[in-house]
Image 1 (cartoon, rainbow, N blue to C red):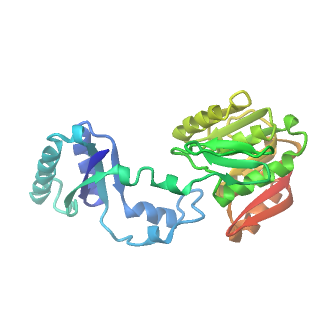
Image 2: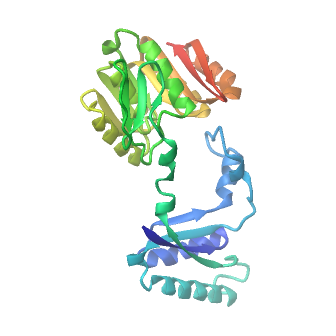
Image 3: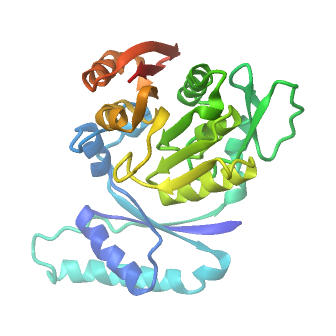
Length: 323
């Protein structure tokens, strides 16, 4: 589909006024690129921060903030000319001191780009193919064919807007540990999947034999994706997916809790995981960089767990701890 990007540069304060202009025209699908957001992440102003940030995201932090809106061919009609006129008038109002002599809206530079999303929308699919994760678990994208071996448990997945294709080290580490600790009597194992994303680990638990799996996810779009994937794999009689924040307000105890999150969130979750784990259960956590493994292990032990093992793949690790 062809679309038009309408982009305006300005200060953070200026973009607030431009946002108001957009909303006055009924436009509320707005994207804002503000380097101050990245500076907040890097300075760890929040309760927890990101473990891993691509170097290119740390570059050019002195760039001018920008606001973008997107129109398809049918929507754009005359609205672009109207927006240009409104932003030009905003510049005149500021120059005349309407918002105070010191008020700065920035450059108000406008760029208009015509693009075709067919060039990039599904580009990532070229890199997602059927993959064997464990001796039994195989992950395949929903759009590709795969001839399973007799022992295979095949997870068909369409990650959509959710994290989890099985090919990332953190997900595959979780699946390997799940297969090991669910054991031969998996039908008696209840599994709590915290931050379930695409639902891949919840589905894996069901295919490995669990008859009672609860997936919890804070993002409502991911909840919908996970539910669709659960149904696609015929696991909706065993797996429930609900919207929630970690284990807050959840009345469910599992024999296994799996959490593929990130180091700080795993640490925050540890005490709650202990309370939601059946006696002698196993807490499997990943999304942890190897250089943070000791810090996370100490937090897990402090919550009352005994570390069973740490599995490493490249720069990532997963921890299995007994409650």
